[in-house]
Length: 214
Image (cartoon, rainbow, N blue to C red; front, side, top):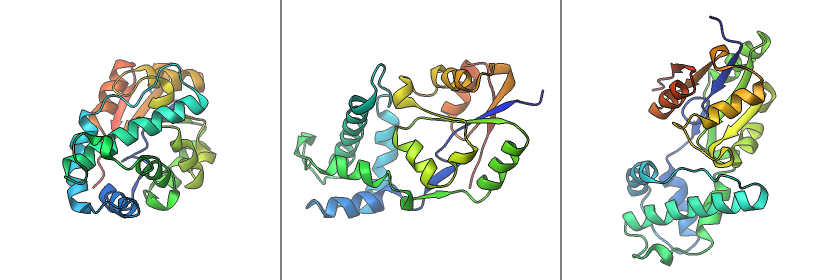
């Protein structure tokens, strides 16, 4: 069956960082009096991120939601810096402005790239009449990023886990995207790169198309 809509993952599917997180962590940390090696951050970050609780805050909106997002990321930043020995345990030794500063830095479009094939593909799908929604385990910064990166005109909805109240592989973000597109699960495919994409799509009754970028 040809789909009437597509749900699209963001990171690793549509967009990615231009450089490893360690490069930016090291640069911002230096402005707050901490010296860290970018390579050490890049090695520690994936493990910390995989072990973290879901980036999801049921019932929160507005400023309360953003405060929860900043606190979540600040905790991950502290854990990463502690893992590489940049701050001592307990991780409350983290400079108080570092977490919010990194949160805001990663909201800036110059750190990100749109994969070369994406604009033409989104335009082609849009021209064919497909409804398109992003479903991402990310936070409220994503909408601004997609706008700044020029992808917003092709998208009918953006669902992020922090506001959805659940993160992939939970089916709830997919279900919210279906509701916003006014489509049933059988009418859409999900395009994403991670195991969470596949598990979440299957839990929502949606066909998964896996992306494998180099």
